[in-house]
Length: 72
Image 1 (cartoon, helix red, strand yellow):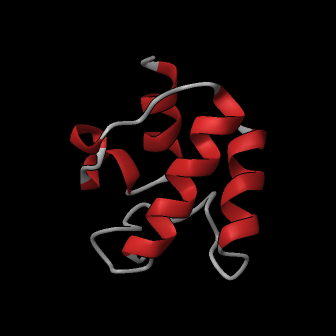
Image 2 (spheres, one colour):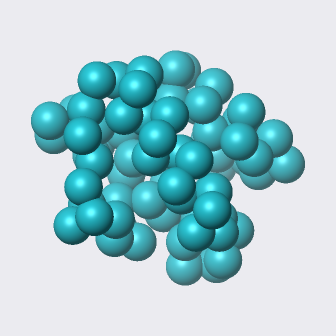
């Protein structure tokens, strides 16, 4: 989880990713942020997040992103 938080904080240092639970629903992350996050996650964790995985449920929190990563 700490590697994921590091990635997220590099992209958006102004967001508290350990506390936020509605990153997409509240409009905190933009589509550009998501593209950067997915690219970095794919490289760091050797996964292949597809377009089908790009749902609010998978990106509303760091925990949901970690669950997505662990599903590969």
